[in-house]
Length: 363
Image 1: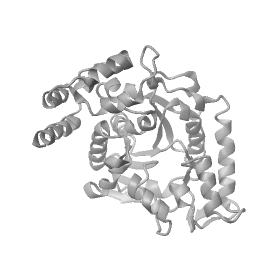
Image 2 (image 1 turned 180 degrees about the horizontal axis):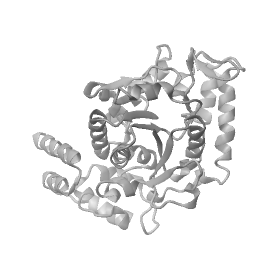
Image 3 (image 1 turned 30 degrees about the vertical axis):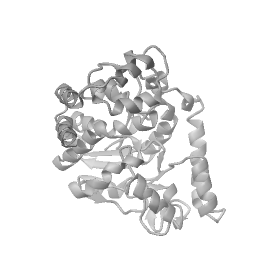
Image 4 (image 1 turned 90 degrees about the vertical axis):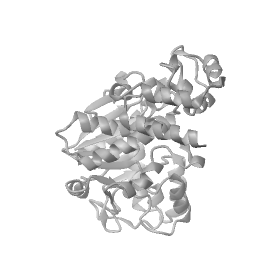
């Protein structure tokens, strides 16, 4: 089994904490890190990381053209589909692949998941498994039914079809843009059970998170933790810090609630792994090659301007002034959409762009 996470360097402390928990509790797992930075520094040398792979090194096509349009919040999610594709191609002998967000922590082996992956190609975890928390129900309608802090696939044709579809969609549409119906990589997965043979894992011990706290029924027998009888496999500490602490105040009336202890223990490990202040590291793709800070407004303009996107070999070689000039020029969008399609290497993305061209023509 390969377990991986996707980060920029400022989340390396979270990845360190996760990796240690994976190695402690899933003995047969290899732990990989997909790192979206220009270079891999010495700070990524960590005994529980089996391999750290730069996003640009596993990418199919022009990575600079792709990553320029993303904020740091979007970047680590935008590359996940391609990284799954890379793993499936590079490790044909592996039959189980699991993604975990870096702010997860594993408490016991993934017994049920391993069994499911023997017969099911795609495993998803929903945010919610019971009604009652209206705030979280509304949040799920906006951010996605399934939480993409977890995703598991086996090595099958169906899993590859799913990953190729998802990676193609993320190539063009992986933004934090809820008004357009997009929330990074996550909202797309609402469609996955409609298109593919996806299993919805309703085991409460997987992907237990902030949104699960209300009436969660967590217990501890002295050695193991359970969620309404299901053994705890991993916690997703999404909203670590003020968000989780606020939810604990509002939803956990009992001061002796077992989650409080787990959170305090995680907090200590989290801080220990950030003793080198790696969380303050500046994202290398936040600047042009010259060192000038990129204007985020230009990123947003660039993502919808295929003319500029596919005719600029390396946007990081420019500056804000030059990018602004290029983005302000008006040209025939159909001509440059077609030109953009011809420059792409990925056949799935080419197909998606061809459909985009037809849509633009029909407007």
